[in-house]
Image (cartoon, rainbow, N blue to C red; front, side, top):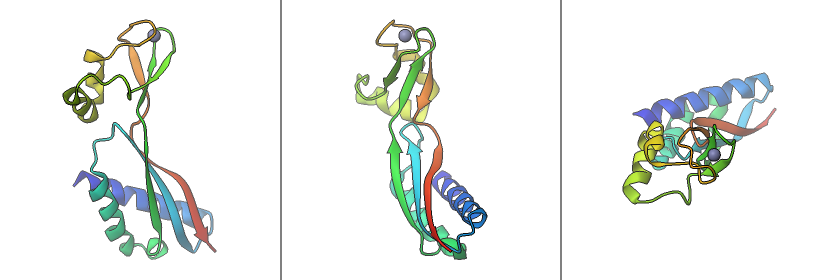
Length: 134
Ligand SMILES: [Zn+2]
């Protein structure tokens, strides 16, 4: 049900923004979710389709979902590196998706080998753009 709660908050936020922009109708909303966000994209898209019916301004809105690739920033040397390419086994990649914090146990900065890094991109769900009509 995680996907439904996220979809609802995305639509509510989009509708609020639309109101503050004086849009009567939302035509399109760009939704970005992080690669590390453990959600099912198909359920999420379905939830958006279903829940928009509850919001008159969003009823005909198209939701364009895109995925932000995960990236990390080394705290020792500030080097930024993507998750892609660092993967060793499928099991590890899956594990990172579910518990991003655990990345520290098997990932190291490719430049200075420090295990001390933070997540720079690829978490959370957000709205990238809105298109509407007045
Ligand atoms: Zn480093």
